[in-house]
Image (tube, rainbow, N blue to C red; front, top):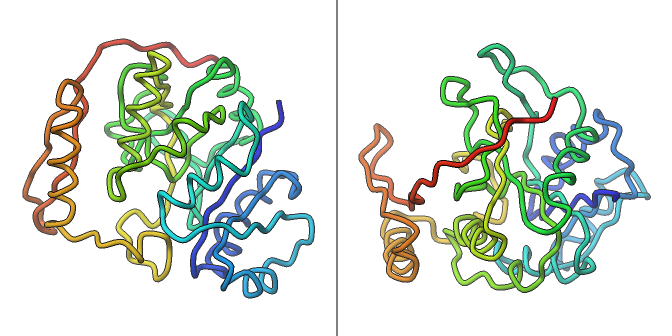
Length: 256
Protein backbone atom coordinates (compact mmCIF):
# COMPACT_ATOMS: atom_id res chain seq x y z
CA UNK A 1 0.00 0.00 0.00
CA UNK A 2 1.29 3.48 -0.84
CA UNK A 3 2.14 5.69 2.12
CA UNK A 4 0.45 9.09 2.30
CA UNK A 5 2.66 11.68 4.01
CA UNK A 6 0.79 14.31 6.04
CA UNK A 7 2.54 17.44 7.32
CA UNK A 8 0.64 19.89 9.53
CA UNK A 9 2.26 23.34 9.40
CA UNK A 10 1.64 26.79 10.85
CA UNK A 11 3.60 29.99 10.08
CA UNK A 12 6.62 28.00 8.93
CA UNK A 13 6.46 27.97 5.15
CA UNK A 14 10.19 28.55 4.61
CA UNK A 15 11.20 26.16 7.42
CA UNK A 16 8.96 23.51 5.89
CA UNK A 17 10.58 23.90 2.47
CA UNK A 18 14.14 24.05 3.81
CA UNK A 19 13.76 21.12 6.19
CA UNK A 20 11.02 18.48 5.90
CA UNK A 21 10.23 18.89 2.19
CA UNK A 22 13.91 19.03 1.29
CA UNK A 23 14.49 15.84 3.28
CA UNK A 24 11.61 14.06 1.56
CA UNK A 25 13.00 15.00 -1.85
CA UNK A 26 16.37 13.61 -0.77
CA UNK A 27 14.58 10.32 -0.14
CA UNK A 28 12.94 10.58 -3.59
CA UNK A 29 9.40 10.61 -2.21
CA UNK A 30 6.78 11.24 -4.91
CA UNK A 31 5.43 14.81 -4.39
CA UNK A 32 1.93 13.51 -5.18
CA UNK A 33 2.07 11.50 -1.94
CA UNK A 34 2.88 14.60 0.14
CA UNK A 35 0.01 16.53 1.78
CA UNK A 36 0.68 19.82 3.61
CA UNK A 37 -2.11 21.01 5.92
CA UNK A 38 -2.28 24.74 6.67
CA UNK A 39 -4.81 27.23 8.00
CA UNK A 40 -6.89 29.16 5.41
CA UNK A 41 -5.28 32.56 6.09
CA UNK A 42 -1.80 31.17 5.27
CA UNK A 43 -2.74 29.17 2.17
CA UNK A 44 -1.49 31.75 -0.36
CA UNK A 45 1.81 32.19 1.49
CA UNK A 46 2.50 28.45 1.42
CA UNK A 47 1.38 28.17 -2.19
CA UNK A 48 3.91 30.81 -3.21
CA UNK A 49 6.79 29.30 -1.24
CA UNK A 50 6.24 25.63 -2.15
CA UNK A 51 7.67 25.47 -5.64
CA UNK A 52 6.15 22.17 -6.67
CA UNK A 53 2.62 21.98 -8.10
CA UNK A 54 2.37 18.24 -7.40
CA UNK A 55 2.48 18.67 -3.61
CA UNK A 56 -1.05 18.67 -2.17
CA UNK A 57 -1.71 21.87 -0.19
CA UNK A 58 -4.81 21.50 1.98
CA UNK A 59 -6.57 24.04 4.20
CA UNK A 60 -7.36 22.57 7.59
CA UNK A 61 -7.87 23.76 11.17
CA UNK A 62 -5.88 25.74 13.73
CA UNK A 63 -4.55 23.87 16.76
CA UNK A 64 -2.58 20.65 17.26
CA UNK A 65 -5.45 18.34 18.18
CA UNK A 66 -7.82 19.99 15.72
CA UNK A 67 -5.43 19.73 12.76
CA UNK A 68 -4.47 16.13 13.47
CA UNK A 69 -8.14 15.21 13.67
CA UNK A 70 -8.79 17.04 10.41
CA UNK A 71 -5.97 15.10 8.74
CA UNK A 72 -7.54 11.80 9.76
CA UNK A 73 -10.94 12.86 8.44
CA UNK A 74 -9.37 14.02 5.17
CA UNK A 75 -8.04 10.56 4.36
CA UNK A 76 -10.04 7.36 4.00
CA UNK A 77 -10.46 4.93 6.87
CA UNK A 78 -7.70 2.32 6.72
CA UNK A 79 -5.22 4.34 4.65
CA UNK A 80 -1.52 4.04 5.50
CA UNK A 81 -0.29 7.44 6.68
CA UNK A 82 3.03 8.85 7.86
CA UNK A 83 2.64 12.14 9.71
CA UNK A 84 5.68 14.42 9.95
CA UNK A 85 6.40 17.72 11.66
CA UNK A 86 7.42 20.61 9.43
CA UNK A 87 10.86 21.17 10.99
CA UNK A 88 12.65 17.83 10.55
CA UNK A 89 16.28 18.25 9.52
CA UNK A 90 17.21 14.60 9.24
CA UNK A 91 16.22 11.03 10.08
CA UNK A 92 18.92 8.95 11.73
CA UNK A 93 19.40 5.29 12.55
CA UNK A 94 21.66 3.61 15.08
CA UNK A 95 24.77 1.98 13.61
CA UNK A 96 27.34 0.46 15.98
CA UNK A 97 26.53 2.95 18.71
CA UNK A 98 26.53 5.99 16.41
CA UNK A 99 23.81 7.87 14.55
CA UNK A 100 24.01 7.85 10.77
CA UNK A 101 21.53 9.21 8.18
CA UNK A 102 18.84 6.65 7.44
CA UNK A 103 19.38 5.07 4.04
CA UNK A 104 15.84 4.73 2.66
CA UNK A 105 12.52 6.10 3.87
CA UNK A 106 10.63 4.05 1.30
CA UNK A 107 12.10 0.80 2.63
CA UNK A 108 11.29 1.83 6.18
CA UNK A 109 7.70 2.62 5.18
CA UNK A 110 7.38 -0.88 3.71
CA UNK A 111 8.74 -2.49 6.88
CA UNK A 112 6.40 -0.50 9.08
CA UNK A 113 3.39 -1.41 6.93
CA UNK A 114 4.22 -5.09 7.37
CA UNK A 115 3.95 -4.52 11.13
CA UNK A 116 0.70 -2.54 11.28
CA UNK A 117 -1.20 -3.49 8.12
CA UNK A 118 -3.98 -5.02 10.24
CA UNK A 119 -4.35 -1.77 12.17
CA UNK A 120 -2.41 0.27 14.68
CA UNK A 121 0.43 2.75 14.85
CA UNK A 122 4.22 2.83 14.91
CA UNK A 123 6.62 5.47 16.19
CA UNK A 124 10.32 6.14 16.67
CA UNK A 125 12.66 6.80 19.58
CA UNK A 126 11.66 10.16 21.12
CA UNK A 127 15.14 11.73 21.35
CA UNK A 128 18.40 11.61 19.40
CA UNK A 129 20.62 10.06 22.05
CA UNK A 130 22.40 6.92 20.79
CA UNK A 131 23.40 5.94 24.34
CA UNK A 132 19.80 5.00 25.17
CA UNK A 133 18.71 3.71 21.75
CA UNK A 134 18.57 -0.01 21.03
CA UNK A 135 18.36 -2.03 17.83
CA UNK A 136 14.92 -3.53 18.30
CA UNK A 137 11.26 -2.80 17.74
CA UNK A 138 9.14 -2.84 20.88
CA UNK A 139 5.43 -3.55 20.90
CA UNK A 140 4.57 -2.91 24.54
CA UNK A 141 3.05 0.33 25.79
CA UNK A 142 5.49 3.13 24.97
CA UNK A 143 5.23 6.81 24.11
CA UNK A 144 5.29 7.46 20.36
CA UNK A 145 6.26 11.04 19.59
CA UNK A 146 4.07 12.80 17.03
CA UNK A 147 6.89 14.37 15.00
CA UNK A 148 7.18 11.14 12.99
CA UNK A 149 4.52 8.47 13.33
CA UNK A 150 2.87 5.96 11.03
CA UNK A 151 -0.70 4.76 11.43
CA UNK A 152 -3.42 2.87 9.65
CA UNK A 153 -6.07 5.56 9.67
CA UNK A 154 -8.43 4.91 12.55
CA UNK A 155 -10.75 7.91 12.62
CA UNK A 156 -12.34 6.94 15.91
CA UNK A 157 -8.96 7.24 17.62
CA UNK A 158 -7.37 10.03 15.60
CA UNK A 159 -10.33 12.39 16.03
CA UNK A 160 -10.83 11.68 19.74
CA UNK A 161 -8.09 13.91 21.19
CA UNK A 162 -9.12 15.46 24.50
CA UNK A 163 -5.68 16.80 25.49
CA UNK A 164 -3.63 19.64 24.00
CA UNK A 165 -0.21 19.09 25.61
CA UNK A 166 -0.39 15.31 26.05
CA UNK A 167 -2.09 14.40 22.80
CA UNK A 168 0.86 12.19 21.74
CA UNK A 169 0.58 10.23 25.00
CA UNK A 170 -3.19 10.04 24.65
CA UNK A 171 -3.09 8.65 21.10
CA UNK A 172 -0.31 6.20 21.97
CA UNK A 173 -2.40 4.78 24.80
CA UNK A 174 -5.61 4.63 22.78
CA UNK A 175 -3.97 2.63 20.00
CA UNK A 176 -2.46 0.27 22.57
CA UNK A 177 -5.80 -0.25 24.30
CA UNK A 178 -7.58 -1.02 21.03
CA UNK A 179 -4.97 -3.13 19.24
CA UNK A 180 -3.14 -4.65 22.22
CA UNK A 181 0.26 -3.37 21.09
CA UNK A 182 1.97 -0.27 19.82
CA UNK A 183 5.15 -0.53 17.78
CA UNK A 184 8.16 1.71 18.32
CA UNK A 185 11.38 1.51 16.33
CA UNK A 186 13.98 2.19 19.00
CA UNK A 187 16.94 2.67 16.66
CA UNK A 188 15.38 5.42 14.53
CA UNK A 189 15.19 9.08 15.57
CA UNK A 190 14.93 12.53 14.04
CA UNK A 191 16.65 15.88 14.43
CA UNK A 192 14.02 18.58 14.75
CA UNK A 193 12.92 21.52 16.90
CA UNK A 194 12.49 19.45 20.04
CA UNK A 195 12.70 22.38 22.47
CA UNK A 196 10.32 24.70 20.66
CA UNK A 197 12.94 27.36 19.92
CA UNK A 198 11.81 27.99 16.34
CA UNK A 199 9.18 30.61 15.66
CA UNK A 200 5.75 29.48 14.51
CA UNK A 201 4.54 25.93 14.63
CA UNK A 202 1.35 24.48 16.04
CA UNK A 203 2.78 24.55 19.56
CA UNK A 204 3.14 28.35 19.38
CA UNK A 205 -0.62 28.80 19.84
CA UNK A 206 -0.80 26.57 22.93
CA UNK A 207 0.06 27.52 26.50
CA UNK A 208 2.95 25.16 27.29
CA UNK A 209 3.82 26.56 30.73
CA UNK A 210 4.66 24.23 33.61
CA UNK A 211 1.43 25.06 35.44
CA UNK A 212 -0.71 24.32 32.40
CA UNK A 213 1.17 21.09 31.74
CA UNK A 214 0.72 20.02 35.35
CA UNK A 215 -3.05 20.49 35.09
CA UNK A 216 -3.21 18.23 32.05
CA UNK A 217 -0.89 15.65 33.57
CA UNK A 218 -3.08 15.36 36.67
CA UNK A 219 -6.25 15.01 34.60
CA UNK A 220 -4.58 12.42 32.36
CA UNK A 221 -3.29 10.44 35.34
CA UNK A 222 -6.67 10.42 37.08
CA UNK A 223 -8.27 9.06 33.92
CA UNK A 224 -5.60 6.50 33.01
CA UNK A 225 -3.85 5.74 36.32
CA UNK A 226 -3.88 1.98 35.63
CA UNK A 227 -1.49 2.56 32.72
CA UNK A 228 0.76 5.42 33.80
CA UNK A 229 2.43 7.44 36.53
CA UNK A 230 3.36 11.11 36.84
CA UNK A 231 6.96 11.86 35.89
CA UNK A 232 8.04 15.06 37.65
CA UNK A 233 11.68 16.10 37.84
CA UNK A 234 14.01 19.05 38.13
CA UNK A 235 16.36 19.65 35.19
CA UNK A 236 19.01 22.28 34.56
CA UNK A 237 16.47 24.03 32.38
CA UNK A 238 13.89 24.02 35.18
CA UNK A 239 11.00 21.88 36.38
CA UNK A 240 9.46 19.40 33.97
CA UNK A 241 6.42 17.21 34.27
CA UNK A 242 4.85 14.63 31.98
CA UNK A 243 3.51 11.08 31.91
CA UNK A 244 5.43 7.82 32.17
CA UNK A 245 3.72 4.67 30.93
CA UNK A 246 3.92 1.51 33.01
CA UNK A 247 6.35 -1.02 31.53
CA UNK A 248 5.27 -4.29 29.95
CA UNK A 249 8.25 -6.35 28.83
CA UNK A 250 7.59 -7.46 25.27
CA UNK A 251 9.58 -6.83 22.12
CA UNK A 252 10.17 -8.10 18.60
CA UNK A 253 13.50 -8.17 16.77
CA UNK A 254 13.89 -5.76 13.88
CA UNK A 255 13.66 -7.45 10.47
CA UNK A 256 16.90 -7.22 8.51
